[in-house]
Amino acid sequence: MFTPFQNEPYVNFAEDGPRQKMLDALARVQKELGRTYPIVIGGQRIVTEQMRASHNPACWRQIVGYTYDAPAELADEAVQAATEAFRTWSRVPPEVRARYLVKAAAILRRRIYEFCAYLVYEASKNWNEAYADAAEAIDFLEFYAREAVRWGQPHPTTPYPGEENEVRYIPLGVGVSISPWNFPLAIATGMAAAAIVTGNTVIMKPAEQTPVLAAKIYELFEATSLPPGVLNYLPGAGEVIGEALTGHPGVRFVSFTGSRDVGLHIYQRIATHQPGQKWLKRAILEMGGKDAIIVDEDVNLDGAAEGVVASAFGFQGQKCSACSRLIAHTKIYDALLEKVVERASRLTVGDPANPANYMGAVIDEEAYNRILQYIAIGRAEGRVVLGGEETEHPGEGYFIHPTIIADVDPDARIAQEEIFGPVLAVIRANDFDHALAIANNTCYGLTGGVYSYNRMHLERARHEFHVGNLYFNRKITGALVDVQPFGGFNLSGTDSKAGGRDYLGLFLQAKSISERW
Ligand code: NAD
Image (tube, rainbow, N blue to C red; front, side, top):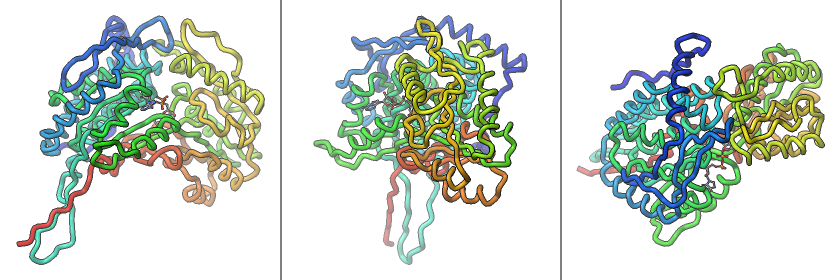
């Protein structure tokens, strides 16, 4: 019924057309900043006592918009509204549910520059990063729409004489979707879309730092005439409304993307049976990383340096897939380090509304202070070869220049703990065996990369480099929907493979029905 899935193409902002459209959108959206976005439960707009201002990380004075923090008491109301909506939504055929997603994708595609402008203002993404985030959101909508139709088709069983047997996949119930700020459009859209298209109803709890983009996602779905209560928008503090939702007995599943410690906490919380709870809650958890690129001897060092710098400093290093450890073979260590430092030193840092700036600000003051603390730790754990100095401070924006710390021990804190900022630890490996051992030596397992021309080394890495997303001779960020399904091992999460063909199964349960004639 739908045309085959294709990834949304990117645009080239060096060309006049896209450049002008982006400039126009930035100017238009700037005039809209400061608007207020209420909570939405069952289609009803709700305001509370506690208003939250969302700031532009690159220009803190600028308020992107205001939202209302949902108090814990609203969790119950939201679960009730979603439960009510589930009764009818769960009976809507998959291909009809899929059309809501395709429609949402069409609207988003028409308004993509406007959404990009919000990504620049609220998340401090540069133009290309913003476009990639929006294009991924479109991909999730289009891909999951087609996937829902596929999952809805008959599933084969072994024939049995005198009986009709079928296995069908049915929705779970009311879900909570808890998202991070770093892909505020793609991840929040993808998690909500997967829940909805499989016949569940969902309560969207976005990150505190990017609630306006989540309100825009709500408006997007509302514009498709999605029935009230299928999607509900409950922004607010994770420790308050997030906690109330994950502990609610009426919630059937929690789909979370965020940090390791919050993921672990949610895992434990939803495993605890609550009075009146009739099921085991399901957890879909995608968490942090401490991702490494191994550079072997005898490779093109310019190509490797380019991939490392893009992976480490794109979006200020604030991607779960970002390269935060460079593990270099001792034979090329010094030469590679020089090239990486030279490239990184040319990156421009500043307000990403200006396309001349490659890196924007880090998300907020808390992130800024945490990253600076890690740089201070790194000063004692290695040799700072780029950045590291106190950057011009806040007031205006939370900018941190690319920082590279060389000669770091594999067990050092900056080689083990997720920093989530533009800080790269460089580690020396004696040989390829040593490099692989270092790469696998963290509690995470999200992304990893190898630059090598040695076939045996690449084949070993295929088996032994224990990460959910492994890349050879390219950067380790920028996974595309259904090209590189995304999700990690170990404490990086439940390996849910967002944007992959198994993903929707996590939002469904199989029912076997047998009729004897
Ligand atoms: P975070 O864990 O601080 O917050 C994520 C979400 O959890 C937010 O909406 C927050 O409000 C909510 N939350 C916090 N405490 C909660 C609680 N007690 N109960 C319920 N919800 C709660 O993460 P962040 O800073 O927003 O995002 C960055 C992290 O996300 C990094 O660790 C990054 O690696 C990870 N991440 C992982 C992936 C992936 O696919 N594996 C993708 C993007 C980001």
